[in-house]
Length: 150
Image 1: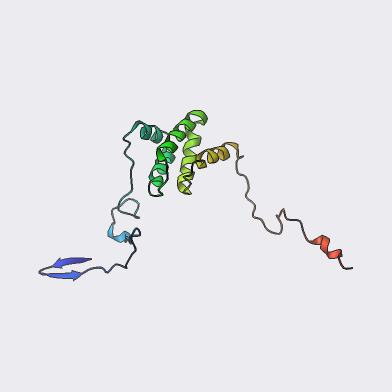
Image 2: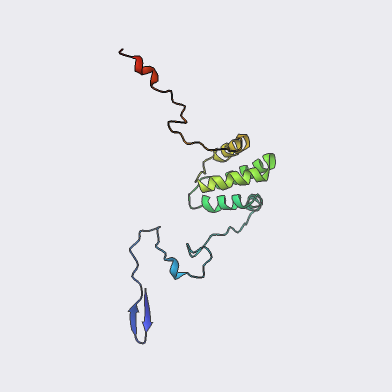
């Protein structure tokens, strides 16, 4: 990056080389930007009734729509219609949560949203999480093998 100083050009910053699709953005070049990560945060502008209906579900639906484009998700319109139908049946809050999770984890296949909704609907609330280790294991022990060969 250069700047004009009088009649000369002066080098201000030398950026590292990047690859197509992976720009190198320095946060200090955008001090007033709200999230500090990038220059542009996409905001969906609904143009059709289907887009308006999807975005009415909630912020999870907005995030899903923003993430589905760059992920090159196939048949987005059909999936949008299915999400709106699902929200009418099981409730917008549950579908919104499922859409947010799907966007976060890059799950845009045909049956991903119904599977996430089913899981959220049937899953009990998460209590204490236990890590699998020697004290908390479902694997049978090897104590029975000790008597072998005696």
